Image (cartoon, rainbow, N blue to C red):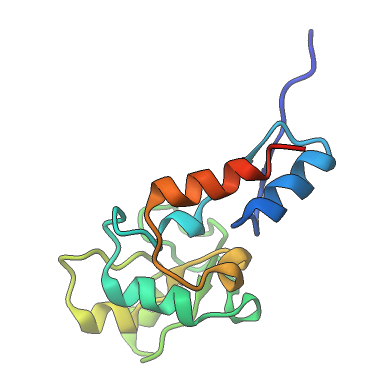
Length: 135
């Protein structure tokens, strides 16, 4: 059996992260949070703004309740700005959700969030990440 390719995930949001993952032996990156801050994303604009405002140390690990996942599933979020009953729920506020939901929810975000400072088209992000594949 040939070795299986390994995908690197977590904290990868730019070409330098991709290059580092490749140097460590990963076949490719698995990028998540960076693609939320795109015009193509269905995330609410306030969710995207929370990503832009957050630093790497602003995320928290949770496992109580994660929208759409079984109870106990671990996740990483930016805590809500307005704690309340909604703060017990982790999830991504969608464009059609009310602004108060975007502020009251924990929003999914990985530690690479500190590298995100603009809402950028997905094609541009992909081109930037691909530069990390070139040695």
